[in-house]
Length: 398
Image (cartoon, rainbow, N blue to C red; front, side, top):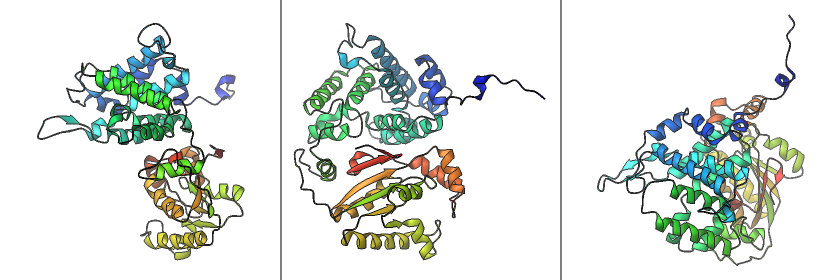
């Protein structure tokens, strides 16, 4: 049977993300309203003092309308006349999807204070980051855009509470290496204006002070310019940092810490890029000890720490190869390396999830697909706050 195929049918079809980001705002809202997480937002009440407009989805739509207004009126006479409000297409998409997800976890976290009757949603921004990351991954969103949105969701409430921090300048500096402070300011402004409550003057004043402080520190539209990578690294690790302190650099060695799901290609990357380094690999240690991935991993972790210490004491460059997909997990290893004055580079690999699952099947000891998907849901890609050098999918972000 002869089948006539139109040439366009042979071309790769755009992902759902590519289609959505080219869509008008009304279509993006219509798509969102078909999603279960959106329906849960519509059923979630909010505190009347802060959100007299009603449920979470009503507020979200008001914020989206404010983002649309900023796009239309940015740079023109009126409320958004300042040039900082002129939105590039990429800015607009980031703000739209940050708006969609900024309160997405309120249905999971909302509770009523039994004494005051006030409604609150503790840590909704932290949980919202994970939901945003998962939804955007499933849509086929590129890694860079996805993480920008996820981190804006996580930190969207910070500017309002700037002066509750002991060192407000340190706050804008820290955030400048995690998000774009300009976009954070713009979103916080739309979030404040996208509600019916009248008592918003003070928070809006705080937002403008956030912008001024970031501009004065030189980190409004770009990360704060630390003197060296080690000065930045030290700033993020000290409980009471000095912004202008430039530590002496005399590293004992360099440790390459790999981060990625099983099957993401960590072994291959090391073979191609760090072939001469000794490697402490949790997979290899499990095989050496005869421990299955589903068994208690205490013995494996203990041996790994011993091997790492041997290399650190001898001031030998080496690689540490494990999944390390959460900040807490890799933080324990980074603390160990820092104790020995090591310079740290993190290599994060994230091919498309379906490719990871396929590559995992070809491994000697394949990890169950359900385990990989669960790890993906909890994955926290590394940031500049954790290391001296960051390499993501083969791209050096120095």
